[in-house]
Length: 101
Image (tube, rainbow, N blue to C red; front, side, top):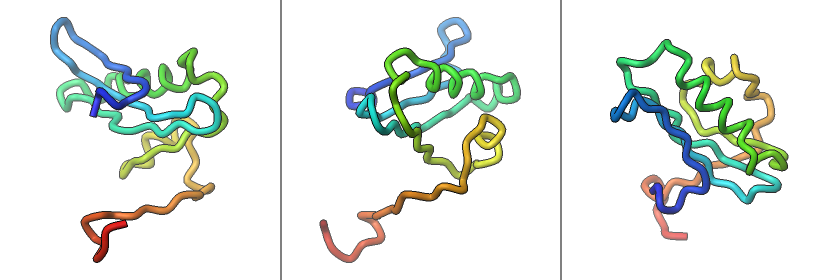
């Protein structure tokens, strides 16, 4: 997974990984934010917020027009300025499909 990820932002407490976010992008038109995860013991300390902000402010992503976000927890991201109003995507699941594409 990480070998094929364009950008990884991580948060550490000493040698312990406590937060993580990753981005797949073409660096111009679109970027998809995936897997913003914070260790349960470290949640509520703004680590996830900082990871998302560092992604959005990252120098290599300054020309990206639209960030897509894949999440099941929209409330957290809406506080950071994300909107669920512009639904432009669809999902295809290999697991739920009767055929292979």
